Image (tube, rainbow, N blue to C red; front, side):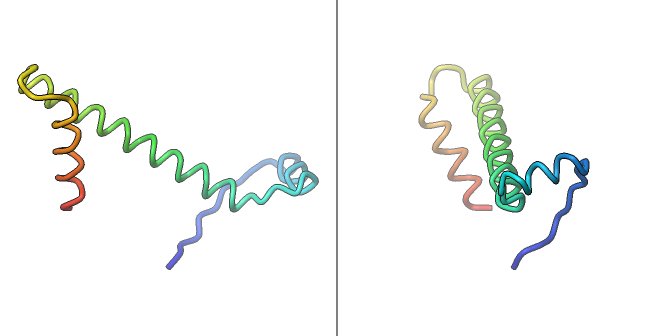
Length: 75
């Protein structure tokens, strides 16, 4: 299933995009996917930093990252 999202852009920008043959929908989908991936990376980094602070150096970063990912996948 898909949902529709829209964005308003200046007329000049829309005309330039059309002249260049740019598929706006594809660009928007790609940009949103990249933004989501970046936000998830940031959240994961913050979670790892929080856990690192709690457990100190007794647990490897790799172990913490694996645990966070596993917990997220369970949701």
